[in-house]
Amino acid sequence: MAVSFLACFLILSMFSTIPFTHVVSGMIGVNYGRIANNLPSPKNVVNLVKSQGISRIKIYDTDKNVLTALANSGIKVIVALPNELLFSAASNQSFADYWVQTNVTSYFPATEIEAIAVGNEVFVDPKNTTPYLVPAMKNIHTSLVKYNLDKAIKISSPVALSALANSYPPSSGSFKPDLIEPVIRPMLDLLQHTSSYLMVNAYPFFAYSGNADKISLDYALFQENAGNIDSGTGLKYNSLFDAQVDAVYAALSAVGFNDVKVMVTETGWPSVGDDNELGASEANAAAYNGGLVKRVLTGNGTPLRPRDPLNVYLFALFNENQKPGPTSERNYGLFYPNEGRVYDVPFTSRSTPVNGNGAGVPVEQEGHTWCVSNGEMAKEKLQAALDYACGEGGADCRPIQPGATCYHPESLEAHASYAFNSYYQKNARRVGTCFFGGAAHVVTQPPRFGKCEFPTGQ
Image (tube, rainbow, N blue to C red; front, top):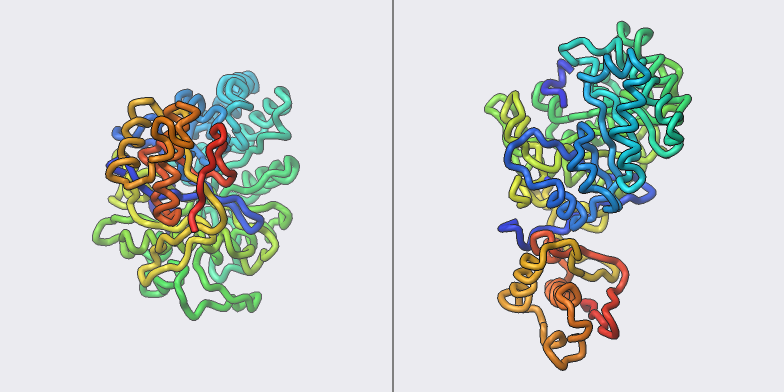
């Protein structure tokens, strides 16, 4: 993540269910960064992610433990070839073949790798790896073709907004002239040829923090505002995020690649920052991420591309205590390393309203949903969660007592599921009542354990 616009996610118990939903209007995923020494194990992270209903994540490497933990989880993942390997991948097809074979084919399809990010914000890499980007992308794609994976796995490369020479008004968006012929055109030609998309990292926070005297905070945070009219198109913009995305689309059109789609692979807002990082706060982070999720899941495309759904990966899953740079860099997480939420954000289109600070107010989920146990949880933790639900939690556990209607099947998983669901329904299926430290998750089909019927709420 670029640190400058100009240079350029309890105790482990009852925390919120945050379903990341893929709908027609757009998709929300999350970046799983790991520059920290206090994060949960990959297996625990996968349990957390699954319990929240998150269906897509993006990582910054091909870590064996992470990819193994993701196997058969149903979570799609974007992996990355780091900048330091660009030269080797660009200059040696055998290296590219070996890298794909070792880091992709060894895990796919059990681990649902759907894309490879070749490098990250290469144009601002101080080690000047830009010349190797497109050759590396071409060699990695050649390897995917060789192993018959090119139809299943896309390739792209995340680009920072600093690659734009102009971004305001959005219709004037253009790439920096010195990048166009050497790298932009050949990269876009490859993306077009492979039916891929341009990965873009967009941070309205940087733009606002550096220009707070010119940019309305409400405009940056998806709050009610007067909006801005693009003098070139007459289109009205009510969010800085939309304006930034459309500036990229305008830049694509300017170089003749109007048909290449955009995916926002990073965006977020810090909950803490230094004194000079204007706007960094929990309330603003909740407002930005909550507003963005609502925008993506309930809205259409951007003003310039209304029929193109917004596909966005939030940055980031956790606060990362070893990231260098200003304080904000270590405080983009939706969760603390102990898996507690940093702030409340509604992550479904049904989770409204939004309060005065922009933070989501948890509301009852619509439709019939149930809470069941996670069969992969250790027996000790599952038993502890069951004991809590039946004790302090106040769940109705009479039906799972010996001789009662739901005692059979006599299994810890079945009994825990009944108890968890009782607690969940008792609490009106509210956000945060089906987690139990990763021991439970929400399902949309009624559970079936023998002849026992699981009740729904009123």
